[in-house]
Amino acid sequence: MQHTPQENDAFWQSTRLHLALAPGEMAPDGLEEMTQARADTAGLCYFKTSGSEGVPKWVGLSREGMLISAQAVNEHLESTSQDRWLIALPTHHVGGCSILARCHLSRAAWTFLEGKWDAGRFADQCAREQVTLVSLVPTQVYDLVAARLPAPESLRAIVVGGGGMNREVALRALELGWPVLQSFGMTETASQIATEPLEHLRTGFDPESLQVLPCWQLGTDQTDRLHVRGSALAKGYMVLRDGAWQWEPIDPDAGLATRDRVQIWHHGTRQFLRFLGREASFVKVLGELVSLPELQARLEKIYLEEGLAPASCVIWPIADDRQETRLVLVGEMSKAALETLRAQFNEGVPGYQRLSGVRGVAAIPRTGLGKVDRVGLEALLRQD
Image (tube, rainbow, N blue to C red):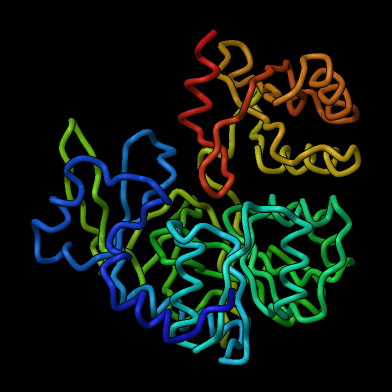
């Protein structure tokens, strides 16, 4: 069902956005009371992070900041009231909720994806409702490509976030007509920091040249770690420590020091960003620095060729006294199938990039956006 701008206005004026909870989810004990206990936190919108560090944490965003981010994205995508957005991401995550902010400003109509994610139903709904804009995560793009579904002519841009797309998958998506644009952002920035420009849909997919949105001031330190400042930046975090919620503000003048490594440069009046990886995405194996995302991309290429589900396996680092780190293939399949996949992966790669073993699990723990729940998977692997 298509929703009107007036419905969106009512949403932004309501209190439903105060705590972004999943359907049926209850607010953690004490969190609601803590958010209301201070004047500087009572009016914020709180989104739960993935919890990759093992500490319950909610990011506090101002509505004004979310709308500033939304305006920057609208301008980047040249979005107007003539657009129709399809929301295929959960609205209790910034990726889905930010679409409502964009529609609120542009006066564009919007609709929710019907039922659970299904690539065929998604493609049909896009065509039936003449959808022009959508945001997806890489796994959803993979599903469209694996099903060889052609894109409806109405679609003019797909913003892909929540992780990097495999280049081979992205190129196949473009061949099928899916106008994918890689983006980079985080909950703390209310959505995107940088996104491929629309011109890449004509000149070619290039995830290493993401255009920085004008609402952000970026910098890096000596190790290429990203620092972010801007009026859309989160105000701080509600963090559960020692059984009590604490408010940890972000200094707007100092900005946010992230764990992401990037390169930044200017071309004319525009600023561009290349994402290099997170600190945790690089490990040492036999003295060599190894990029886990690059290895995962190689694995995903094999998935595509074999027709496997992209979320069925992950390369996982395990500390090792001799090698510093061992790389293990963790997957939702039999040990024999994992060994076959490991042999395919290891063929022709240097010794320090080879997978040294396999581990079968019933299910790889994941967040609502499909990212690996690192804490959950660590706990699962320690059970043996």
